[in-house]
Picture (tube, rainbow, N blue to C red):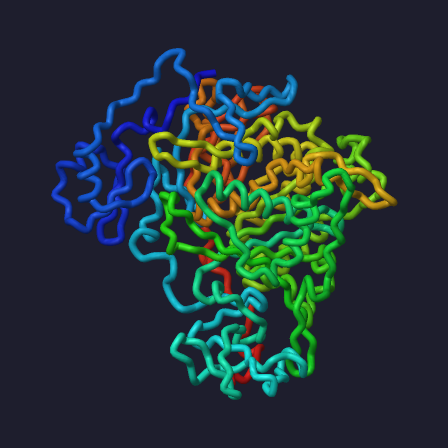
Length: 624
């Protein structure tokens, strides 16, 4: 295997993009740009890094020389930093994946930078940071989405929560709740004054009257939904994902992931304290089951004497650090996660009084946990030593999946023949129970790549896609109906193996428990990082690219909208993959070698924008 080189080795001088009057053009060579008569307000993006002014770019060229880097035979490879532990591993030490041999890590080869906004890939060896982020900022208007009821509202009509003790009793929240009101008077600091003359600082949705954190009113947001059957491990997954995200975003992507509202995130914070901050490292602990209702999981409002249950979101603020080269400190974003009890998606539970799953309308992506220990076909492949097998959980998880898809179609008006444009991330949890059947050792497979030329870390979307394809091929053999159902309903589908605990749990008084000292999550943060990448929040790189010397380019293909049909040499059978695998190199178990898929032009639905799913008149609430 060839040793990898840095981005400058493969990119050269032909990767410069220009931003002129809000339009991106390029790529151009450095020599061409230097000869162009460009206006002073022209923006430049070189090597996929941040946009800067043309004057600053030319000054940089004048002050620094840029030698052409040529790979030297036998030169030491760049170290790849493991995303969580910080351990440094030489890429040359990572063996090529060979399914017939012992599990091995995926090799890192020639990288190709890619940028994804909304899942759309620009076909170029290097793509610039989205120009709109450098020109117009992140906030375009005053409209926000309530994280509780999902109804759009104008920030100019936000309600405030009364403070005066006489102003008790709200028409939606009950006789004991402080009254919500549309303010008419403000103090010098801009805070509202209630009817009793008290200064009010907390705000509420003008429709459902639930309290909204100040950051939700000021900042844009990305919403992600997590769905899974009862007892599939969503609570453990959510806790491990957030814990790992806090670390990897800070250490690799120059972001700080902070609680927007400690009260809303109290459940997750307690779970983190129990699993990861527990001082008794050897005493087994367990998390409680996610409930359908209750103060920690849902909020209740009353409309026309009818009780409605709203989901309780987990809200975080993503704050760029000063060292972030893509975003400035002003470009903060809210990240909202929803974790529903599996019972919410049971057929017949989608009633007018249960709005707990309507956040699916506004979510940029959906993470669906498919528990291998609840499917008899995969149980036979799992370790017999895992105590979770003794619980005997079994369910038809496709029934829950079908119900979820039906609600998305109903709320968004999506036709039966249309695929949902949201990204679906199918998480196969409890990797520690079935890792022996998977040909790749995830613990030795880094998903972050560091570029010396950009002085920046990138999400290695090429490695993630290669792992997803390997898991997909395994599932096609074991669970073809699951793969078919997922890919027939969503345009873009990733399959991600995850271990929330990273260690086999134990049985304590008929309860599954784990010692905090044994917890070592594996790839738990990857599903969220894929979502951040597709939302344009973090940059991506393909280090597992079609430049791999051993790959075979697939030529027998037919593009069918969002699907690529292909055939393999020597095999009289037709195969298919979603468009998100196109343009990538993967390992094919059927051929026993690396293959490279061609790029295709993705055909989008006529209307990819989902509606609000709500009639504004439903919340017939007085504003004062």
